[in-house]
Image 1 (cartoon, rainbow, N blue to C red):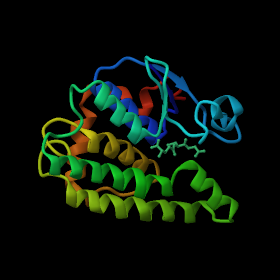
Image 2 (cartoon, rainbow, N blue to C red; image 1 turned 120 degrees about the vertical axis):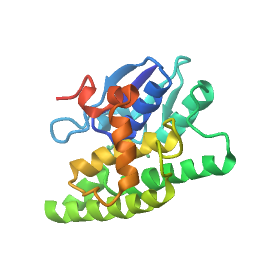
Image 3 (spheres, protein in one colour; image 1 turned 135 degrees about the vertical axis):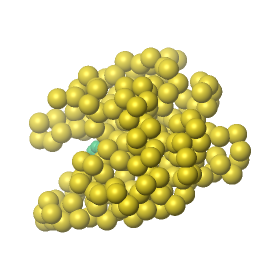
Length: 211
Ligand SMILES: N[C@@H](CCC(=O)N[C@@H](CS)C(=O)NCC(=O)O)C(=O)O
């Protein structure tokens, strides 16, 4: 498999965690999102891979190109079922998907690079951007803190779908200087993931394009 990825893209990081949890080997194909130095994601070569111009994209062993981290992770979980990323219990599965959706739909799109660039174009300064980002991350993580369990990872002793979304979002929170001290459950999950080989392997500091 080949993964179009950028080291500090949280959406790419989610897929890297899922691949690592399942022990799946892949070749990383870095796409530099940095404008003006990079912006390789907006070049015709990459738009032919993902018309949305975003990472990640996964080329499967069968040559199929997949985009959107939730769809890619779901594909991986269906194609390579063990270890499962979703619990057996239907209600727990829905809770895991809810946490993933809070992060993937209601937090991350509000601070991804193209959103930030548009806010800059519209005249907002860096302090306003940080306040905007901090607002949405804090609001979303506050809800996640209420939804996840009291021990282990988000929903049990083994990491799963919700953790593949939460840990990258915490990396972004740190990057944008959002305080996490009022989220003891989230901090417990973060401490566990920090020692887990799959999360370490997927971390932005351990990628081929890490500066
Ligand atoms: N919903 C998409 C989000 C993908 C996304 O926004 N990726 C960001 C990096 S984390 C990106 O490529 N940004 C570049 C841009 O928007 O131009 C997913 O989960 O895959």
